[in-house]
Length: 285
Ligand code: SAH
Image 1 (cartoon, rainbow, N blue to C red):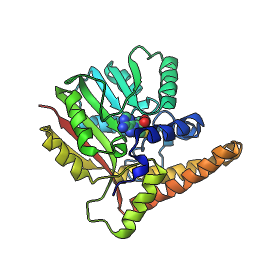
Image 2 (image 1 turned 60 degrees about the vertical axis):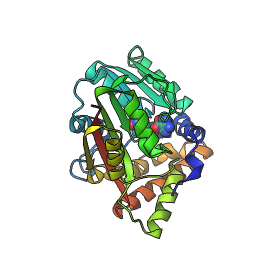
Image 3 (image 1 turned 135 degrees about the vertical axis):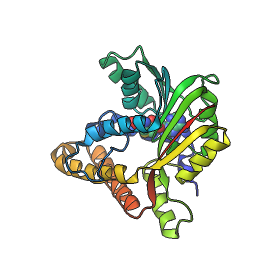
């Protein structure tokens, strides 16, 4: 079931522009717009923003990415991972996003951190990238695959721009294996609407698509347990910052309340096992 409202790249870009310009998302999440890593599946003793950095580090260790020099960060947000990858590997990183607001903020942050020379951000659609074949030795896609309105074309395009010997590493929102109940379909539709998403697939679909493209050393893993506490943690952080939220303009406050509903849907999605957090890594032969 596809959510037609978000098959158009422009509408996704607009949503991320809004999430970026009001600054609320960055206030809470920092530079990383993705789940945190909670080793024991609980928020106890975990810092909200640090958990997101931990997620990047855990993913890199899990993905066995080698020592990449030329990295593509697909769906780079405001470049949190791009800068992390740049520092960690002394690599040149290109991020792509659909949101001009994100690109502008990413460039500001890279400038502040003296990384402008090595981290570049472009507005481009991941389904049709402005890069030659066999170009990058690591493709990093952290929570962008779920936005792709055509998953087979996405994996095909990633394979095209990946260098032989290079690694594709994806962390993405999935739904559990089919068949889903009517109630689960309804829950997912609500989640798609809240987060500008066209549709999820089960993790096994990414595995299948990667093999179909001829990628090798394909591995997948489910990190729902480690990622799900993000949402409960977000509620706690929000409650702890009520006075900050109440000082925001009305339109921003209204949007934050709406996001609160979206967060509750995520908690429900994980609790019922409908939503899964999936990882896939693969190598181009
Ligand atoms: N990876 C980032 C941001 C995740 S948010 C981080 O971890 O912080 C999802 C990102 O995917 C946004 O930047 C959005 O613009 C991007 N995106 C969604 N669909 C895309 C597409 N078709 N092509 C390129 N980027 C896309």
